[in-house]
Image: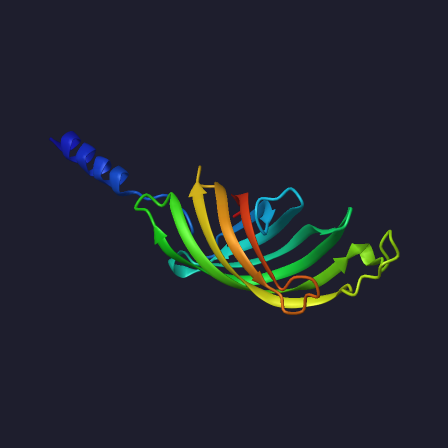
Amino acid sequence: MRNVIFSMILLMLTISAQAQRRLHGQQGMQATIGKVDGLTKNSLHAGVALSQFTKNSHKWIFGVEYLHKKLPYIAQWVPVEQFTGEAGYYRTFLSDRSKTFFFTAGISGLAGYELVNRDKPLLYDGSTILSQSKFLFGGAFSFEIETYITDGFILLTGFRQRVLPGSTVNKFHYQLSAGIKFIIN
């Protein structure tokens, strides 16, 4: 009889156990890559970030990002590059019972540098670019889905709207991204 009771208690503990995911203070390193302003071949972005989870499965993000876009000019493409740093807060608003899928929305502050035509003001036909390379500031609104493959390996997909009023070329960029995250502690 004792064996039956012990087996039932052990089975109940096993069924109710949850994965150790998104614990307070847990950190992860993530890398993302994606497209900017649509699925054109003339744009991309890539970034790396450190995330730290807070209570209630929310998280802080600290990272850097590179954005590259080519703008058309007659028979030439003019490259625009942005190098930005990010600090943001993301709130989890939905997750499944098994803690496999997490839907988060966040807001971030951005600061960095924009490089237009690699700082060359003249184009091949003698035209002068009026947009200048300069420092940037602004923010981003993000929506992200995290899918846990294991307790330490996560797939990311996301949408982000960047607002950079300091840009001389384009003040708004939206990004579609995919990435991976590894839990490091």
